[in-house]
Amino acid sequence: MKKNLLAAAAVGAVAMLGLTACTAADDVDASASPSVDAEADATTDAGIAEPTADDLANLEAIEWSQEGEDAPTLDFEGPLTMTTSATRLIEDGDGDAITTGQIVTLDYVVFSGVDGESVYSTYESGAPESVTLEEGSVDPVLIEVLDGANVGVNFLYGAPDVSASDGSAIFMAVTATKATTPLERAEGEAVESAEGLPVITLAEDGTPSISFDEAGDMPEELVVQPLIKGDGEEVAEGASVTVHYTGWLWDGEQFDSSWDRGTPASFSLNGVIQGWGQGLAGQTVGSQVLLVIPPDLAYGEQESGSIPANSTLVFVVDILSAN
Image (tube, rainbow, N blue to C red; front, side):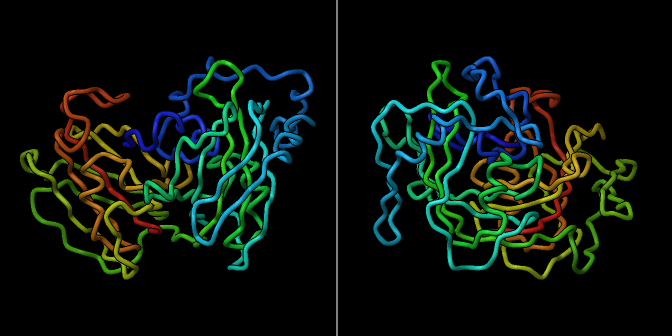
């Protein structure tokens, strides 16, 4: 469901940090990752490669500077490389405590380890990223630096640049600006669905299933049908959201489900297909929404994974959090 969200130069950085929710792991070209030397083959109990002494020294060599609420800058002499991902705490914040399982909103600037130039900034794009702070959703080193810290914490993140093949690294100046505990599922007042739409049934845990037996003709325009009306804040255009969702083709074939993966997804509405951005903006946190998305607001004439070209897509989306 996700389209290209970041500038090409920062894609590798974001993939390493774990901010590419809804993007399959197969999208990352493993052959483009730099080799890891024997020293970096040492791993933690979680199977994560330990940073080498040189990795840690490179992080220590970077100077963080920032004026007020301006974007931070990183000063260092390149080239600097990394064999694996690692973080360095700059300063803890004075906000609420951050714990695993929360949705953490991050502002950051990405710098090239080759020449120290900035290649992407959420401060410039106006689109901070939200991540689910739990194992399997983000780089484990992110959990290590954030779990137990406080909102406002500043830290460095360094990693091999997976978009390069020459051992290059990226370095990120990251600030956690918000932490919220998401809902587990949609909750609110049930809404009667219009006639002619697929019928949705929820399992005890909230997982949706679908029946097209009573559905009418396939809609040609975007359909946005609330099934549950939540009483949370309204989702703004371009907001970062955390959702549970399942997607089907109009013929009933399921092609994706965060419920099946066992973890919700977080992403910006600026980075998804148009039908999602248009359909979820204006809805409220806690709501469950049925979206029927025609091809021109989805993937059009192009295939996307198991989704054929010119497909009308059907989603049931639980809005768990929005920033």
